[in-house]
Each structure stands twice: as C-alpha cells, then as structure tokens.
Figure 1 (tube, helix red, strand yellow):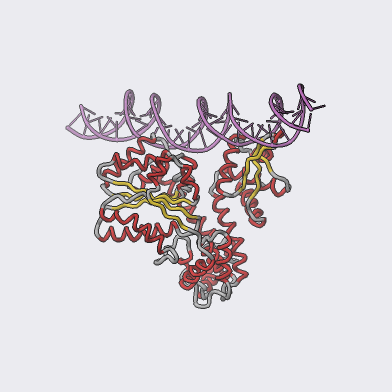
Figure 2: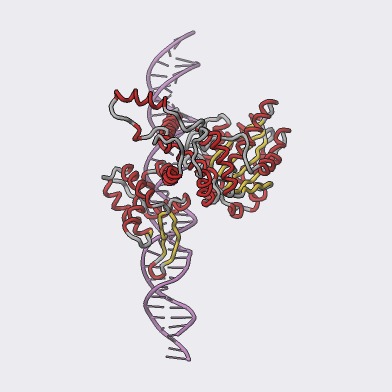
Length: 434
DNA sequence: CGAGATTCATGTGAAGTATACCTTTAGGCTTAA
DNA sequence: AAGCCTAAAGGTATACTTCACATGAATCTCGTA
C-alpha cells in the first residue's frame, strides 16, 4: 500500500516537472501582483494563438498515417498479423536510429491490431515497455515485475525472489489465456545492464506455457547490438527483422509540413522555417522526433513573444533550449551522488582545457562531499557512475593508457557551452551549494 | 640501440555488507459463544 | 476456541564497499653492437 502511494507521488511530481520543462507552465510567467493576475488570464484567453492544435507536435502524438514508412508498416504488420488468428507470431526485431519512426510504427500497428482484436473480442494483449527507464525496467526483476503489473498483478519493488516473480508472471499468463505481444523498446540498454539471460528466458517461455503464447518485439537503436547476444537468443529473437533507415532532409520536410499544417494557424509558420528545421534535424542523423520538437519549441517561443509568426530566430533559440531540456530531464532524475559526480566533471572541465582523468574527478568529488557533508562513495563506484554517464551520452569517456603514468578514463563533456552553464547552475542548486 | 622488465593509476570482476522491503510464523490479546 | 494484530525470523534485490587481480604503454634496465 505504501509503495503504491509512493508511486503516485512520484508520478505527480514527474507530471508537474514535465509540464514545466515543456513550457506549459513557465517559471517566469507569473505576473506582478494578484490584482493583475485575473487580467493576465483574461488576456491570455483572448490572445490569438499561433497554435491550432498543439497536441500534434507533442512526442506522444500518433498520426493517422506515417509518411515514408509504408513499407515498414507492411512488414511489421505481416509479421504480427498471425496474432489475429490466435497463432503466435514470429519474434520481431527492429533496428534504427532514434527518431526514425520505429516506436511510432510499432505503436500504430499495435493500436490497429488492438482495435481489430477488440471488435472481434480476440484474446490478445499488448505490453509496451521502455527498458531505458531507470528504476522501472532496467533489471531482470524489475522488468518481469513490470510486465506482471501490466497483467494486473501487484508486485513489490523488492523483497521477492526473482523466480517467484517469474512464477507470478507465468501464472498470470496462463490465467489470461491470451497471446501476449511483448514490446521491449531500447532492449540494448537492458541487455547492457542485466545480461541476455533474461531474453533467453523470455524466448523460452512458450515451451512451458500451455494456454498462453508470448511473442517478443525488440526495438533497438544500436545496430550492432544483436551481435553481442548469445547465438541461441540471437536466432530466436530475430526470427524476423526490420531495419529503419534515417529520414533524409526532404522526407523530414514532408513530415514537418504535414504536422505544421495541423498544428499551426494558416500563416503561423514563416518562410523558410520548415526547410531550416528539416536541415538541422537531417544533420543529426535524420531524427524526426527532434525536428518536430524543434518546431514546437520554436512555436512556443514565438507565442510567448506575441509574434504572429514563427521565424528563423525562434528556431535558433529553440535549438539551444531543446538540447538543454533533454539533458536537464535526464539529470534531474539522477540520484544525488550522480549529480555530484557530474558537477565535479563540469567544474573541472571549465577550469582547464586539458583532459580530465578519473583521479581528478574523484578528488574534486571528495572535497565536494566534504563541503556538503555527504558520505563520499568509493572510487570504484565513481568509476561505474562515469561509465553510466558515458553510456547515456552526457560525457565522453575513453579508457586510455598513459604508460608509465597508469591507466585511466579520459573524460570530456559533450554539451554545448551554453547548456553547460545552465546545467551546472541547476546542479549546484540541487546539491545545495552556495 | 633495442628487447624485455618494471611501473603506475586505475579498470574490472567477485564477493561481501547495509538497507529496505517481502512473506511466514508464532505469540499475545480480544471477542463471542 | 476463533479471529485478529504485532513482532520476530528468515528471505531477497539493490546499491554500494572491499579485496584482489588485470591492463597496457611510457619508462627503465641491461646486454649487445
């Protein structure tokens, strides 16, 4: 009971936070005294909005048709279709860089299947999980527990033996008597942390189940990921494969145009904004999600400044805001010790131009801990934390040997200067530094 | 001069520990017959 | 006697620590030309 409550609280604070970072509530938005507040709201309501329908530009929006992905849709649908006849479809594996429409295509197919299945009351159940989410689905126990929760079981966050969780999961499945389609987004992250035994277990489930059937849909950003797997897992997981290639600038433009038409008022978007937006995203390996986000943030900026149109300037400032928001989101949710480590790295990196090594970071971190009366973690642990930051892309760490002078990680921050400052400030607040 | 040994600072794996949480069980208390 | 509550016992996952060994190129050493 207590942890249910806890989860709820967590969820609430997350919601609040995301609305702030998305610019729905702006920290600086408050106006003068209470008297003027009413007037402000009136004005806000009367103000003509640039947006016709902003939802279209949010990252969780699912369009009716997905442009330039018809073939992929068809392949995915082909693989999953047998589910409608109550057969177990082949396991499916999907690769592609971020923002190439993988998740979108899968979600879309899933929604369609669900619709058809519901209309004919077919025994079909989907579970979609993003394995990257920290403290949700990043270990074997948590993943299985999370799936079981989707099947209507309550599982404590810790305390049960893992086999027991498996058993609960099996029983829930048998009970359901369904075909279960398990969609694991960003599996590479999971396997990196929890090993591939977990996937092996999942692929083997069917042989122990009598009534229910499970099919896996794995989604990965890393194309080489499949090579690291145990051959047994590899062969059964990728019975079918679909590869998503990045969008080119022209396609991005097409996508943006469609969305913009839905989202903005007729003359809401200025000349050349969309091509520029597409160009920026194409430069970053054709990430459509970013392109759309960019457009949205630019629109929000324009609106806040009471502009009639989104202009190129808005686009430019949006580019900075976005990168920051992404990293801020990531960092805000990190545990305190991680934040302290990152703060140490940032401080060191602005203090000097030469490379930073693990030892320096640890020294700085230690004094930082002494300052804030935190119990410092050991160097061993910091080493692991650095490796994790490297994985998530906030820093770049390369293990180098300095010969006589030992072996270490050569760390550099992969953030633009402007972001760098903001983040550091944010961290110093979080750490209660003055 | 060059091959091999040495060295340093830290990477990395394995095992151990603390903490938070779970279920089960046993004992004590209350209640109703 | 049955039912309920509580605390203790016994168990697990996770984050972290401790211990011990692995790494790999710059540097040192020493034999040789």
